[in-house]
Image: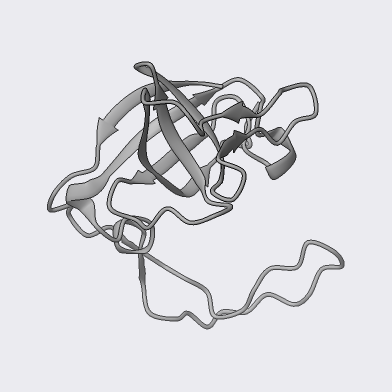
Length: 142
């Protein structure tokens, strides 16, 4: 899965507060609309916890499709987040960027698509974890 760099997050993003309804929306049977609103939601604060360490990147490819990360999705990546077993990470392998699931126990980068093979990183010096994927954003318009 190749990654297309977009831009770093702003170090001091302007607030963008939008209405957040108190009730949740059903994906099954409709329910009566709720006019009550919670405090406004600032997407900058909600999605970007550490702006100076955060960047955006667009996904190219389908090696993570089984965990719902698809071609064209926008990833929000935090360079300072703790890399733990099972984290989705952005890694540079010999200078080439990829996005995979970190398997710390097996020392591999795992795909989430049976058509792709894991990448063994046990004895490699050319692998750098560039950050942890915190969120993915997808566009639902076709």
